[in-house]
Length: 188
Image 1: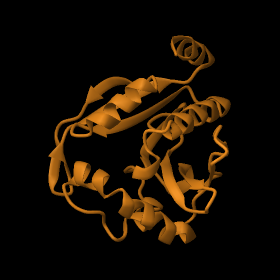
Image 2: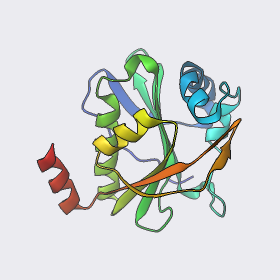
Image 3: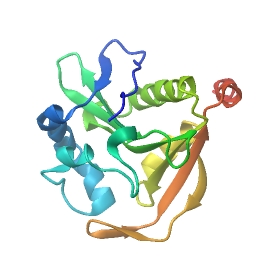
């Protein structure tokens, strides 16, 4: 894998750092606490190998070279969030977020917004021009969250299988050019 994005958030209670396979046990505890997410997406509980799988999952035709996985730790050393994806996907100037997941006990406190803002800043500093992601149709709260962060719907997929469910995926994009950043800041 190439270098993981390096950035911090404006919150003294949390810090962001690279996740490695040796963090799998701690990361699995986060997945287990986020069983609600698995039920929304897949209609079944969290896989006992979810943390190991996140380090190996890449889109077809891609390698681990452009994958990134960062964790959000609280000051007690627990992982309370994960941001995972690919740089230069689906094109050279776009980054893809495959997963943003926060523990239930830290949701709704602005941590996700801070993480996304800093990540957008980081992608911009790496000459990225946009960030894309997908949200399954049943995850309305996630869709609203991403809209509030300035992401816009660009298309929806045909229904596809996720565990025990079949769902449409809403593909969203946000431009992270200096001009779009200034416009977003003005609107807030």
